[in-house]
Image 1: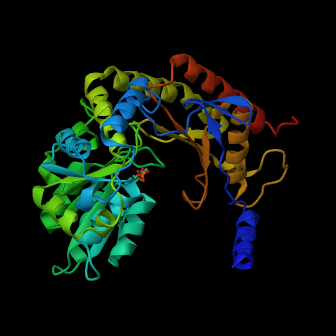
Image 2: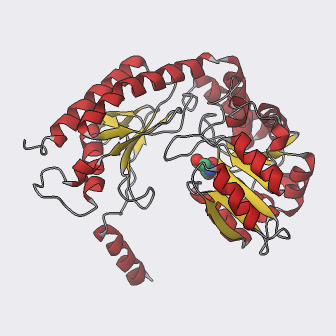
Image 3: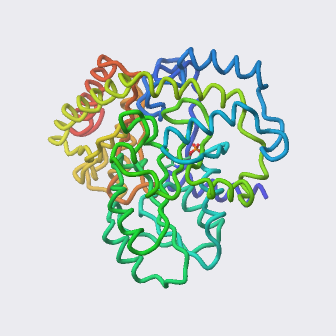
Length: 413
Ligand SMILES: *Cc1c(COP(=O)(O)O)cnc(C)c1O
């Protein structure tokens, strides 16, 4: 076995796709790593709650009252009062009748799609949907089709060509994780209503961040909850804990409890974490200033980083804390390499820029194909309410320095 795997690993290295984990200590965004401080702009802790002492306190209290582990699946004896209360608060947050906890967003997506669809059915996805949604479609054995990114008309045209006797689930992220842009839920809902398809929205990056009360993309766009049959939200991003949930009608949740294998055959989410997440929800509702601070950081980043256009680095049009900066074609000549290299050139440039940011004590991720299309390698910055305006000034100064230095021919120039 090892020799087979070793060959695969070697190929991965050869293609420069071999990835490594960095071990951190401390609480984000100010991590320590490799002996130095790193100001991180790559986590999804959008409201800065993962390190909030009130959550640590609530987690301790939850552990004392309910135990650290659920001890069994929800249907056996792992469903505590902490879970029950959290489910009703999540239903309230999303405007749905009922919500059901899962241990992760990945699992929630597996659980809901494999329950709704079978081999005769179709899942019609936005082209940029999260990997877990695609994997869920495969688990269901359903036919996987895609529509053009954020293009509800294309979605409608594809719906029109599908046989009327097939069940069809239209699936979209609320906020797209690689581009930071937002689905237009009204347009999608109109198409689904016209063609009798079901609409599912995975709002992992919108929940807690968008909407006046942090109710997510749907709330921000003023859409009635009943127009979205299935909403998935995660607790590990803006809510600062871990786990996920599906929200929808009473009947949907009832069916998931009865039929969803990824729900049934797994130990319940830690009840201590469920208890702590109740405190997150209090903060999400009670401290809207976190969202307004985040909005001011986003506005400032976009205003100032727009100037990088002159160096052929391009901000994508994102209104959310996910801010991608695409490396333009002139960077196809890898830094330090005089000649134009093959199409991997701007991948190398994205890596070089990310490395330069790291050397200067900051941290963002370089995203390359196959995660994003060829020619759109990028630095992906994520902003958080835990960042100060000074933090952002520091990032911008380090970023402009690195970009100027590398664009003029590499570290030796
Ligand atoms: C992060 C994410 C998930 C997975 O959630 P986890 O709780 O981390 O497993 C699912 N969907 C989207 C869109 C995500 O961004």
